[in-house]
Length: 427
Image 1 (tube, rainbow, N blue to C red):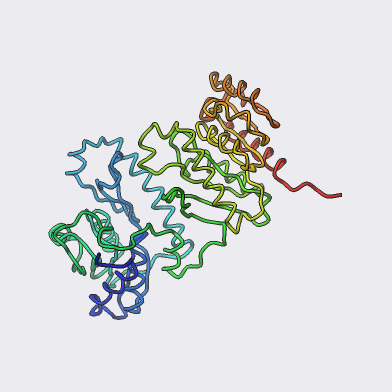
Image 2 (image 1 turned 180 degrees about the vertical axis):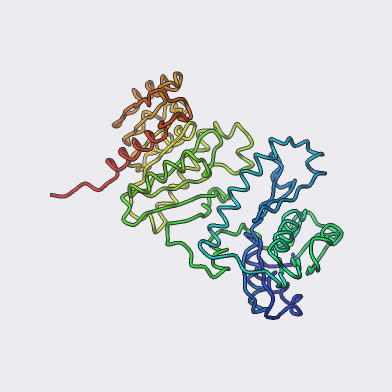
């Protein structure tokens, strides 16, 4: 290993950059890990630190393989050789680019808020990452800096492949690297600790106060993995609702995010998290492995109960499609202690005999035009032992895409959770 961690790498990289110290230098870190490295460089050079927000465009079935990158200001770099080799269609490329654009915009809001980007006009700009593999994101970052008026662009990294200058020589005016080994397989092989950097660590490196406890993007440790999550807990919340997404969806599901906002406005906390990693979700058998999803949900619930923002608050489940089966399965555990459950277009049949052990008040919301799922939910309702109801949204299909349908779902969920999770008045 060359480096203990990103901070160690940053200090060693800073030693190679001492000649650039001066009043006209700005350091740009590439989120997430590059910002931690860049913070050490900026500290040693006494230079301002900002972020160069760039997103890799990964091949859909091999996301680590970059077919290009995008950055702020419309910067876009494509690797035509990769696109041709793996036969990516224009539609597939557009879908990946749309998803990464959403994440790029989220990170810009998260890492800057109301602050304006650093002024790069006429400056020497040091673009820093924790390492370079393909170089696609670094190339996009250099283009961003030039677009914003940088007079001199320096690309600086702790480690890169031995031929990195041949790949990126024209992208920057100067290249600086601590080590460029011949045997290079992945950046992480040169770090003793290369764990994923969190948003909170990026904000700390930038000197930005993090969100109050219980609010923000984070990772949940589950079974040796770290699952991406979003936890929002309003002041004086009466409970927290954990979302179990369905059919391979994630915390970015626009439908569930809409419902979560409605619940937040009603004084309920929400936890949206990925039940599966990206690699796991690519295997469709995992999407229908109710027991696996339920174990993940149970582990996330256990983690949530130990979080300061949720201490002592009742916890409910909101499950969609196959996620509803996972919610019911997890709620059937003897010590689950779930206060209420809402299912949207759920597949309770996938929870099978576990339904009889569910005692939490359960609301099953189904699209009136979703005939098969209506039957499955009505049958499941007869097996549930606790308070339960089936409510049909007239004319709605499985995804509740019809005008006003999702709004009805959110209103029904809000009423159900607030009535079953709010403290009972005394006296």
